Image (cartoon, rainbow, N blue to C red; front, side):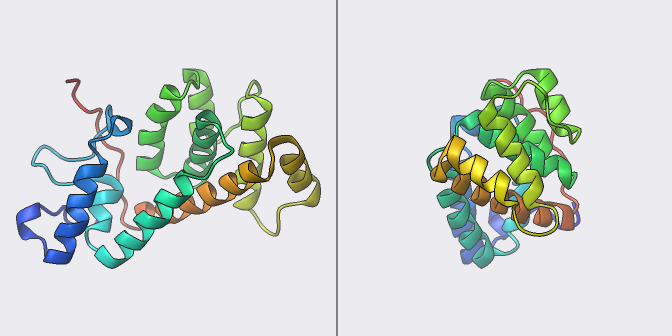
Length: 192
């Protein structure tokens, strides 16, 4: 990573507040199975970067929390969106973490592999395929085509489309940050 990893004892009070929030966050089961800290206890991945920018980190964390709680989209479809974005921009840490989370959500290893390689598995559910198509199209040029928009709203509902849009925004923003500072994929977390 292009930024140094920070340890709690070297943080400013503003950074410590963010560190403590991250510390609470990563204790959730969702974060088991992949590296969130290095061997010395310093945060890696997006947390390691955001500690350098505490005001932006707090704002981004709030946006992320709101985007992740949007209703209407299954967890499998959410992971399809995230892996689609991660692959499109080759975001190492995003692909590393969400390959595991996608598998936990029920995606098969071959589906995860195809998504990580930038493809769309042919056997996704209709919800997942539309989520992948919308996310892919949103990262291209121009507006979401009317027929795709209409199909997504008619088939999935407006809440699901909104969730796809804002999860895409979330992982685009996070992907830009991770790629700017060349954040590598982590190692598998040791089993407890």
